Amino acid sequence: MDLKSMKNGDHVNLRMVLTKAEIRKTKANTPYLQATFSDGTETVSGNIWYWAAALPELGVYDVSAVAGEYMGKKQLNNIVMR
Image (cartoon, rainbow, N blue to C red; front, side):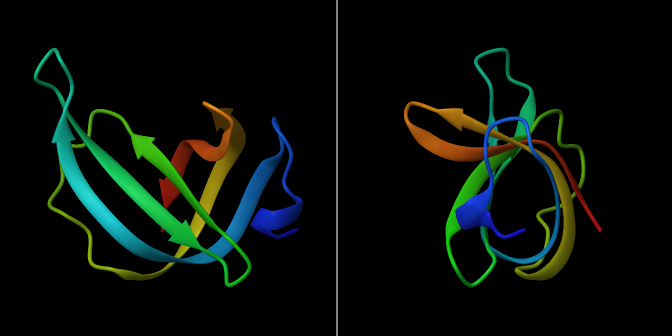
């Protein structure tokens, strides 16, 4: 499977490049990580809620997530990066 072929609800296990990462705060002032990944065919974003670690380095990660959609764009939910 690649990002291009994923559909809502699919469980995704891919090696991807973290191309952008930014720590932000929710309205409740809780930190989260806004991340953008690429698998070479497509780019997709997602948020990792309750982020308490340092900003991760950009590079290659094994990513597990659930495919979803937000405002008409594909996104990743329940992201785990290794």
